[in-house]
Image (tube, rainbow, N blue to C red):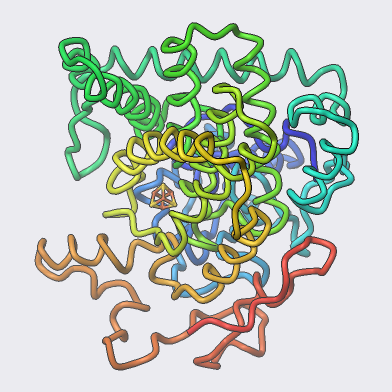
Length: 457
Ligand code: SF4
């Protein structure tokens, strides 16, 4: 597993996979260029399907300013290694391509190169999953955050301080912002109003309202293109900060305790990232908000005095009760259901911690098992439920607006009685098969900890 620095990244919303990752890729390509006169960026698969709502075109254009950038949208085509593929081409005055690069945005701001290889972060943790983490903790009587400190460099302390400061800033900014979010949905910001109303409520309702307000604040900032921390992604960035700040204020906890909880939550996210996926385009929202809930539940259990077994139980429940959650953002905007979903997951994370703390930490399904189940569930999920804005709530909304959903090629040919056609994989012989194994699943290396996906329909 990589350093927590590869998980927690600071950047502009609304999407780590659709804006943060593509922008980082565009900046790297721009820095490598000779003198050129124009840029062409081709977006494939999920990036093209929901890229307008996610502001992907703006993210990949900004690093090339003032050069003109042509965006080509190909939602029905995919590059071989991940649903979020993009290709950069630099053109000279004669319109000839003088430089090109393909890259994948794999979620959480992480990139894969042309051959589908991840960025060159060194492995700093020797553990394959949570069972090995628990064994290591129990062998030496360590807490999970202490184990993190043992494997990370000294720089992790200051780094987590920066992460926590950025999370708090996002909450503060979001609580003070009003008006509507960008995009055609005209979604009103709610965090400020919820926060004010929370002050007048007592007991459980007041606490829940406060937690809602914090999560809404970050998620609305994210939707507005503000600065957030991937925890583990931009779309799910509201859950962990909300739970941490809520418990800090509620229980008057020190900053050090919050940083320790951030470390433990990060290790939980790292395990999911290694053994399954945190990309909505790969496994649906269970990988984003489900993982965020697991991270926040673990953090909460630790902050409330839980043992390592209770922390593991809380994380397991946080993910287990999001299994099967689809990614179906209306209009491709990271707004509905995303913002509300963050608020609900924050409350659920605290509930999972409370439930685990009532137990002795023993339970039947392990965190490692639920991570594997999440991965297999994601592999079985149809493409329309994996960040294409072509199914689920997105489809229902489009139908209400007059049926414009049929403009999407997968949806146009889909009916409840038929298997939706496979997207075309660039350079893949599997392109025409209706029972295609999605290459990003089928090509899993055993070393990644994720088994191959048997196929999607
Ligand atoms: S539905 Fe979930 S996975 Fe999909 S864009 Fe929204 S937050 Fe991300």
